[in-house]
Length: 158
Image: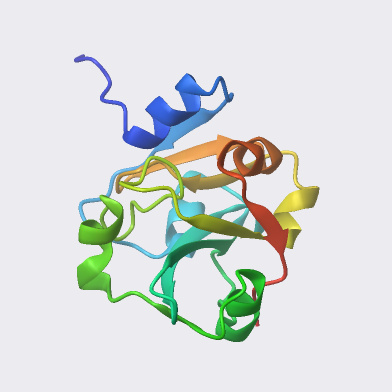
């Protein structure tokens, strides 16, 4: 078996001495987060997706929320001090973040964006986020993640 290829997210976590475990699943293209959680036997409410939005100011933001929930754009905008935010178009994900749809994670992007994590994560000892490529999930402490990227915990869902 060949050497495991690490993603930018994994390299970031190791550089910052943040403990994590990685899980992989067979997938050739994007699948939704609920399907991903079920494929790995992960609790859906502990599996978070990363959405990227831009504000009226032109700045980009990352929002992490449980895969079964929907982002409230008004709450999201308030959480980052914007009048409004809009999700970026799927075709722009790679250009803006360096990741692909289904593999986007708030760490190891081309540029670190202001990040807000849904407040339910603050009470979890561990949660799952994308590992930086389709078919890879990382399990880590939400507080460790937040501390490493200066993220805040806020209510950002409908």
